[in-house]
Amino acid sequence: MKKKLQAVLAALAILAGAFPATAKTTVFVSVLPQKFFAEQVGGERVEISVLVEKNRDPHTFEPLPAQMAALSRADGYLSIGLPFEESLLPRVRQLNPSLRIFPADLGIEKIRGKDEEHHGHTHEHGHAHNHGGNDPHVWNGIREARTIAENTCTALAELDPEGAEYFGRNLGNFLKRLDALDGEFRELFRGREGAAFLVFHPAWGYLAREYGLEEVAIEVDGKEPKAADMAAVITEAKRRGVKVVFVSPQFSGRSAEIIARSIGAAVEAV
Image (cartoon, helix red, strand yellow):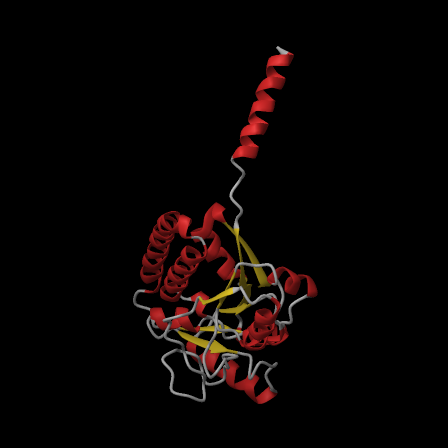
């Protein structure tokens, strides 16, 4: 029995050598939401690495040496329109001339900043940390997420043509889930058009635009607000009956806590 088992294992080893596992396509993305989208579409055929890891601030991001080394060996990069990409991508091209770069935000109608005509719902006290006047937080809108996923599928199919059908199936399944989520949101926000929600960092403009909400931001020009700005936000929040202040872990919550106490609201991390 032992000899038979050894023979079977030897045969399996020979077969494994004759049919080696297909190497995964290696792709970098800028932020964690992109990694999630790319994993849903790419599945087992793609290895996804993210530059701005958890609790790192994309607005002050600088890649680590190990990340630059990995980028020099990667097959593709999915950009998303963040400011740091403007200086990073030329350096990456020098390190890895064969790297394929795909704009995952291609075709998205961007929300413009407070100093320009815009289609979003960012309050005048907020600032979108924009790139070229645009709000870069496109991954937080359902419609925009669909576009990112579709662009990701197109990019992966170019990098791995043999997986195109597989990626297409995964995309279809993911879009169905986004459609279901969109239906839940529309039901949740029905009749609440014009309602305001208070955030520290203005990252939810695309969600607000889609469902007719208004984002009121505490942060001013990427900094903690001054006393006059705080007073204005408190007045606005009281007038609108805001009950929750949303904060992100990577940003300071001190001002959010002060405002929440002033208006009798809770602070929730998102």
